[in-house]
Image (tube, rainbow, N blue to C red; front, side, top):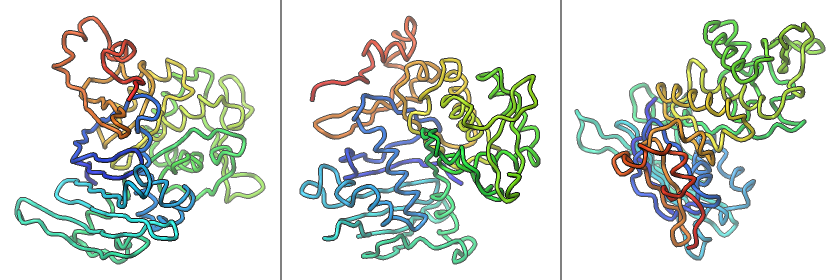
Length: 366
């Protein structure tokens, strides 16, 4: 699995043009509401569904092709993206049809290596409505697809904001749903159970980290549902009590922090973890712990996260932070440079510079 070196994205929602933007191991997006932070994350959500062969369903669920085109179809006729990772890459161009769907005007895989300096492109055709990336069973070992497809599959967007009574994380789920942590943590109990029995040291670390934010928490109770042993639901135990509580008894912030801790401390994380405002609902102590977890996750893969929290940003270096702004109706992305802030950082934290608008990351008139 390989990190994204450069990303080009054109014509997607508020992003008119993002040209060969360099992604590092840690990428913390900060900026005012409506600047486009979530739109960049939305592109990766589209990419997830595209790789799964669910592009048309996703486009329909989001309101049709026009909802994705920058300033609508009269301004933008095509979405173009290029992801370069290691020696490989993936390119696509999506255009709207008269029925409000998106189709592929172009799709190709890319390779350029040291031994083979001449670029090699593998066109996958045009005019199709779902990706023609090969399925795992069709991929030949050593082929370009054997590098490109697993890498694209390992860029995962996670969204733990839904903690309502009907949220998947609170409902019984399949005991065998353990291959990876799902985007909404709906299989958190099953995933934790596997870690408990196969990675006891890592499981203990997860448990101890949660206790730092929720000292009343003792441990998870990860047993099959009595009425149906093929199902499992998230239960937990409070210190000093044997009675198991359900996920419904946790505060929204505590439940989110549990899911974030498991995601960021799992032994085999995806190549890129993508999060939209993970600090929502968290106590300041939990936000500080979250910062530490994000740093640790970045040792094993890329992290891309949007935030509105100066407190969270305080725990990162300037070069980890990307300021997202609106310029003439389009999103702009600018990575901070430590040298330009060196004198300011002698007296203020990075979060304070943002709050004081010395680093311009707040609303402004266009």
